[in-house]
Amino acid sequence: MMVMRSLSARLLVLTVFFVMLSEVLIFVPSVARFRMTYLDNHIAAGYLASLALAASPTGKLDQAMTNLLLSDVGAHAVILHRPNGMVFMLDSPVAPQPDVTFDLTKGNVPIWIRRSIETLARSDNRIMRVVGPAPNEPGATVELLLDEAPLRQEMWEFGVRILELSIVISLTTAALVYLSLQWLLVRPMRRITDSMTSFRQDPEDATRRIEPSGRRDEIGRAESELAVLQETVRQALGQRARQAALGTAVTKINHDLRAILATARLVSDGLAASAAPEVRRVAPRLFEAIDRAVALCTRTLDFSREAAPPFTPSLFELRPLIEEIGPAAAGENGLRVEPAVSPGLIVRADRDQLFRVLLNLAQNAVEAGARHLWFAAVRAEGIVTLDIADDGHGLPPRARENLFRPFFGSARPGGTGLGLAIARELMRGQGGDLALVETTGAGTTFRLTLPAAEVEHAGARRAIA
Image 1 (spheres, rainbow, N blue to C red):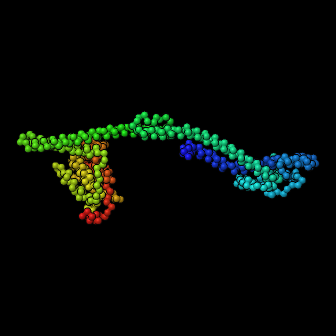
Image 2: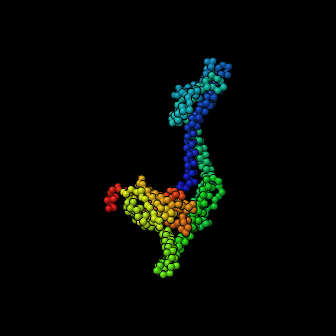
């Protein structure tokens, strides 16, 4: 059973099977053709025997010569009909009556096949009256009385020869196909499979990478692509290991740095009460710098966590949450928030995480010089789509190219780009997403998607109330 599971063994069996099937399909026409040749040959032999009678000066032959000629033909009687009406007949003393007549001047391939099958299927010895054209004498016909048993015997012997030849051909073809496929396909595929198995055991080992054989066919391409894939995976695993080590180190450093910054904040609080004008003037900037440093440490710690933050879904109305964004994100010049959201629109999400995402987008808009922030939400097919647009100066090209990439996608000098990366991670953790729709010099639009609550608006409001 294990042998039959291999690709080469299956190919061998299938090759033998299809060759034998092809031989079976050509067996019946071949046997029919053999029967027609058998009868044509006897017609020709009978015609030659009748010529001996026609050449006789007396037009007769003694019975001994007649029997010899009939024995050579293998017939009970031979009759030659010439176009001028002359008839020459050679017959035995007691000629049997025919059981069936076959006219070789009539019929087609299906009829010949049917008659061949009929002959093979019978077991008795019928007397056949066979009529056919005389060779080399147009218009003349020859009649024969033949036994069917010798014909059947030779047809079976011919069939056995075909079967033996088919077996030899099928085995030879199967062996050649087997060796060819073993060399062209099976061995290279086994090499690829072994390389994949070895690579899976230790992906970081560079020696387990497959070496392409240089073939230019599909196997060669598969080897090359596998080699590239293995090298890519190996490098990715190495980079991931380095990033994991770096993340662990950054986490420890941030933890210690937050403690140091907390101490610095406590010390700086005392500077706010100083009577020196220079100290009081510098203190707000110092507070702001310490707060930024603490916020950076917090965002870095949030991003470096291996697991996503806990997701606590609930049903709530989206509009009241949006109305809380304006006061929380207002800058020195204020921020006007316009929520184009239906009061009855219910979403299923983690309210605190969603507030954090919207607040981050609003703060980014304020830092980009925005004075207005528009929220537009629609529900379709169980999905709530929320567009957040501002009238700021848009994102710079570098920020667009590296958007949502931590430490690369910041739109302002000194930024880390962690805000949008964490926001997208939070949204995807809730079954939604965050994407940039467009950004120009007149403003930026982000699109946020969330699963809608599977409840009616009125019923949801009663449940919330």
